[in-house]
Length: 200
Image 1 (cartoon, rainbow, N blue to C red):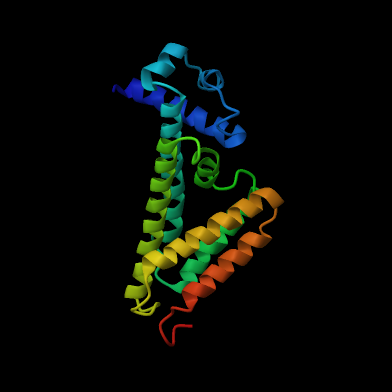
Image 2: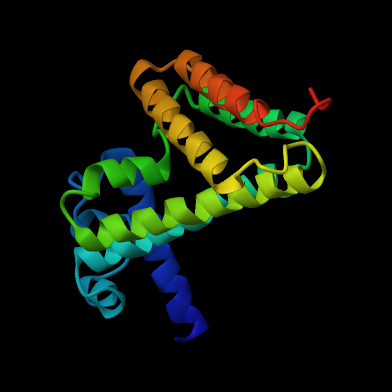
């Protein structure tokens, strides 16, 4: 693919991602995407065989966006206090948006998981990559003596992701971060229960 072609494809995906984030997949047509990206039908179909293919690209783009944001919050964390900073940053970002939009991956999963096996699998891969990044952070905490040697980073990461997704959904529907704060605090208390003696 030429640089110009890659730029055109990226513009289409970016436009589609924005529309789907605002309106959902059901409320976004290919005509909407063509108008928003200033592309023709022939251009769109040159890069994407159908709407499902475009949705797959949107899921991958949103996964990259989420993981990039998480990397800025997690990749330097080596203490339980640092993990609380991760919590605080997510709460602050959600509060600034008044909960609007929820989690890009979670919202796509809710809308598509029972409609498209390919979309469901792509969203699941995105969550798995997110969980692995969080588990890597928790593994560093264990290596630095913050967590008990018997603590299981993958299980702790799964519990944090589950709490986060529930909290983000409630923030999206209630337009308040109260529940998000509560569930993340409870999840972090669970992580803290596996702290090495003397850390807390």
